[in-house]
Image (cartoon, rainbow, N blue to C red; front, top):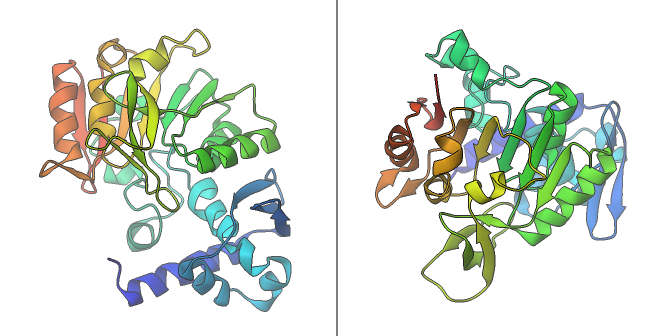
Length: 304
């Protein structure tokens, strides 16, 4: 568990980043918090109610607290955490070194200088107007929205299993007016099609399991998603789904073997005593893919 000093340092960093935002307004709409920032669409998140949000809020200046109510603090730092530095940006250069490592999605954010990859390989994980991305574990969609607006990609298919997060995802996509670019699915990804037990925690702490027989959730495979006629030819797959990355890739043999896709996955979880990055390396090698795991166990796989 993060110690108090590290927690305080992260809160102080997020507060300093919020201070840099040109916030026009923030408030509550129904059960959700929203924020209006210059140059961004209105974005929604959970209402703040946890201790960490309260800590961040206490570190904000009176100027910002006058605009942002206490129960809207989480949507403000979600803009920093998920929109300004989105998980889909594999080579995000926004923050470097110790600042990047300690305070944000540390395992998502590795700069080009961290990668022992040649330019041709790096290009496979960079986006263009032809890119079609499967974002598995989209949470509330801020990363997908930021990616569309910054890179004008062809399509992002956002997959989120948690119903509360999915509602916010859809609300954010609609607020941004990106329904033509961002398609959403409220479903879980696994190695087979069917139903699995789904446990929903607070703020992106969900997991699926075959060990329980309650709270069943519909599950499908990446191959089944890619066979959907509404989904264009997929070029990139992003997986951040709390240890289910291994099972998801087991259900991606067809798309992963197609030589047209690059995979980026959270490999820092442990699964059966091994890091997910090591397990994914074995599977993707069987699919004929090249693999690479960064020092923070972000996992990449691609074809020549």
